[in-house]
Image 1 (cartoon, rainbow, N blue to C red):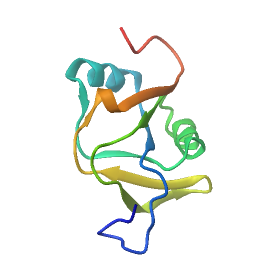
Image 2 (tube, rainbow, N blue to C red):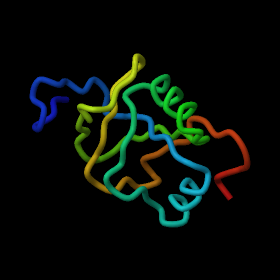
Image 3 (spheres, rainbow, N blue to C red):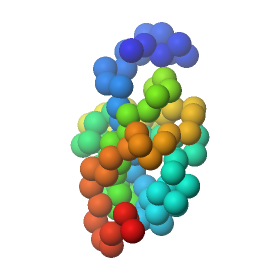
Length: 105
């Protein structure tokens, strides 16, 4: 997959990992979506590094229906920041990691 905005940037995977708080995770489940823009990381390791840095405790694997674009100003040694400019249904997310209370109530 190649981004129209960044034609030289090949996106290897049609998925990414979104890091969030327990509070927002519950809102996603209640509204049945994550509101656009939805940001994330190209690898689970990059998402875990961001989660540790920000103190966020939930990581979702996201398989969006919309095209994924790179965020040129976000990267770490494990991966790049990416986003989709569309809402993502909860049907297209899977909890990869959650520390703390249950987010699926």
